[in-house]
Structures are given as C-alpha cells and as structure tokens.
Image 1 (cartoon, one colour):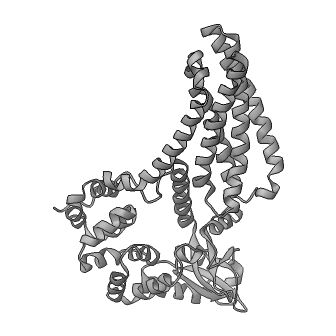
Image 2 (tube, rainbow, N blue to C red):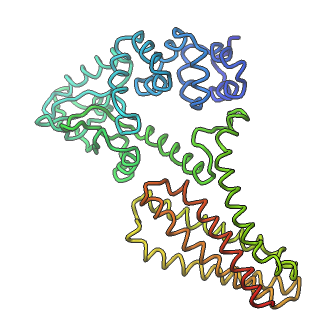
Image 3 (cartoon, rainbow, N blue to C red):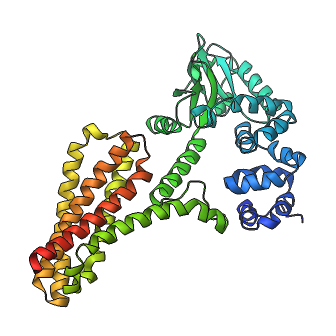
Length: 420
C-alpha cells in the first residue's frame, strides 16, 4: 500500500499508533524520505514495536534521512546488540557522528546536542570560512554553526547569513556574536535554565577542557521542556511517564494498578476515621451529606499549594530551610480562603436546612481543613525533596490523605462536641 507524499505526517503517525496489526504495512507504504520523520513522532512504545518488526535494511533507510542527533535518538531505543549492528552499516559520515553522540549520557546536555558545527579563528578571513561551510554542507547535507575561537577559547559565533553580506577580505572578528556555553555533563534542567537566562537560539556544549563538542538549539530545548511538562502532569496524576493514549488496556493496567492500590489504602484510612464517629453520623444523618464537601475542598486547596511549591522547587526558589516565610503566607491564604468558603457553605446550610449548629460546624471545619491543606501542601513536597524523592509524585498521596483524614476528624469531631 503506497501512501501519497501529500498526506499529513501526523495522520500517518496516528494510523500507525492506533492500528498495531497494520503498523508495518502503513510505515513501509510511506515514501522512504518521510519515514525518518515518522519515527521521531512515534511514542516510545510504538517506536519499539515498529522497529522490532522492521528489517535492518528498511530501518537504516529511514535513519539515513535523519540528522545525527535524531538518528541517535532512534538508535538508542533499540536493543544493544541491534544498535551495534545498525551502527556498523550506516554511511561513514552518519556513523561517525552517531558514535560520538552515543558515547554520552542521554540525560545530560551532551545527550541533546548537535554536532553540525565548525570552529574558526577570530582572525580568519570570511572567504575562507565560507569555503569551509560549503565543504561541510557538501559532506553532511547540513549547514553548520560557526563557532569563533581566540587563543583556542570560545568567544562567540558567527551568524551564517552574515557570510552573504560580508566582504571576502573581512575577518571573523567583525561579525562575532555572543554565545552562552555549558558543560557536557550538566542535567537537562540546567540546560533549560541556561536558555531561560540567555534567550539565544543556540548554546555551545563544552568538555572538561573547555573545548566545543556540540551545539544545542532552541527547538531542542523547547521539545525537552514539553517532555518535562508532560512528565510533571503525569506525576500529579500518578500515571507512569511511559504511558500514552495509544497503549493497550493490559499495558495501562500494568502502569496504574500499584498507584490505585496505594490510593485504596488511604481511602480505607479515611473510612476508618469516619467509622470512629459512627454514632454521631447515625444521630445526625445530615452530616453525611456535607462530608464530601469538606474533603473535596481540602484536596483541591492542597493541590493548588502543591503546584506552587513544586514549581518553586524546580526553579530553586525555595528549600526546606527557607520555607518559613512561604509557610506563613500559605497559612494566611488558607485561613482567608477557608473563612470565605466557610461563610458560603454555612449560608447554604442555613438556607437549605435551617440548622445553625451544622452550619457552624461545617464553616469551622472548612477553615481548619484549608489550613491543613496549606500546611501539608507546603511542607510535604519540601520534605520529599530533602529525601531525594520527586515531590510531584510522592507528595500528592500524603497531602490528600491529610486533608481527608484531618478534614473528617475536624468536621465530625466538632459535630460530636457541638451537636451532642
């Protein structure tokens, strides 16, 4: 089945992702020049499954259409033995580039860098630089970044478009622009921070001796940021970062059941707490109607605080030893929001049930639970971070448990004291 070139790549990716039995046929039906880009858009699970079905020759045809950093990403998704086999059969230029890139940790700056660059001396003539750029393009098919050196140290880069406007006798020094740099072994988070601090379109990657070994472009960082944002969203929901909408039901079950069992345990804890006040609830059935409001509002408030704290931790704006000012402000905000919502729910109870005591109990419980949410939402993620745990993933369960259990204790405890 030959698919026309005019078809949207995203449509093919969708078809390949959601039709596992036709995956190989759909992929091979696309023109070879498009196959590489399709591989890059597939989720990790679908990519692994498709590559397992592809013959080595077909896979190499697709990889040869990619830039070295993109080809490296695809090759690193393969089993180690096959990685070596594919690598040995690539074209010499791509093989050399991929071998360089695969030598680095993919979770560092070097893992996302591009090696399409040339280094020129600041006193070099523009005409000579233009010739070297042309040679690089003929050899690799890509326009290189032009890194300027002075005494073998990076001093900046030369925008490629300047070559067309400069006089042949001009020197590189006249057209140098600043370029930020980072070490090859820094984390992806540090790469993102560097781009935020220096909003240029590229960053030079240096080795331990300060020599350039690659370039990171802004589009690579944007893709990295998007991946991190997706991971953060998954963390909050308790979903495995590898799970996607294209996964089978059995795969989804395998990713989720442990988290759901943990949540089931906390639900039993909350239920046991409610059971302590069984006599009060039996005597005042109306309390059961308003219990979900207390727990729900506490959980929502805790999640709001958690989101702010996780962002502050990620940006290095806060840590446990500097948390007191933030904790005070969150508690003040929690009290104010609790008071506002407490007055509202009390008014609703008075309007609907005309029961002043239950209105008072619900209003006071709302204030208490939003204070609990503010306190736990601030402290728990910082404690998790101190112990080396991901606060977005690990803090959520403790915060929701606290707001459920302590919210019910406050609501039902106040009811037992005031209504009895």
